[in-house]
Structure formats: C-alpha cells, structure tokens
Image (cartoon, rainbow, N blue to C red; front, top):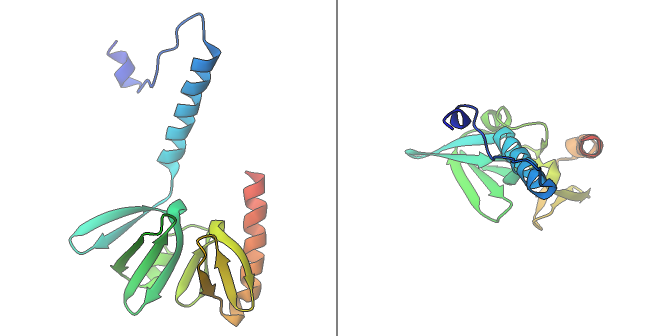
Length: 148
C-alpha cells in the first residue's frame, strides 16, 4: 500500500478493467501533466510574489516604470519592472508590437491600420515598423498551433 505513495499513483485500476474508469483516469493524468508544464511568470508586488500563467495573459503594457499584465478573466496585475526584463521571461507566443506592448498571439483576433484586436475586445497600437513582423509572427504561430 505505501508503495503507491512512492510512485505517486493517481488511481487504482482493478480487473476486469472498466473502459470508462480507465479513460477518466488517463484524462486526469494528462491534465495534471499539462498543468505541470504550464509556463509561468513570477512577479514581485511589494513584499509579495505572485505566479501568473502565461496562457492566461492576454497582453502586457508598460507605463512609466510599471508593467500591467491584462489577464483573460479581466483582472490586471501591476508591478514595477522594465519591458526588457519582461521580454526575457515570456515565451514565443508573445510579440512586442509596440515599445509599450507585448501581445499574446493566442488572443489576437486581427490586425489592421496600426492596431491589433484582441479577443477581450481591447485594441492595441502596432508600430508601423512592426506591422509586417506581426503579420508574419501570427502566420507562423497559427501554423505551429495547427501542427500540435
């Protein structure tokens, strides 16, 4: 019995095997693996640290010395840092479309005339120099997502 804790067993499957129970167990295992691999960002807010899932971050905005991370649920997390530091802690799904903005390409719904439209309804400015790069990054991102 105690060996189950050593190997981190998540369920017991008894014979004769019930296909439904087996399927539910596998789904639970895959969900826990996926959550364990989720990319995270650790931000320091005063004397507290907060973990933010990158998949929940729609876009990041810099105003002065403060960074605002806009989350999928509408919450905005703010903390003091620089854009350069933030860029080193996010993955390839984030694109800097403007000197003050990083967008999560998973949430981009379109771009036109110097703006990118996000699934949350916000419109973010895109610098003229980065419009073409953004279009290419979106195409590459969409191809990569289809390949998963």
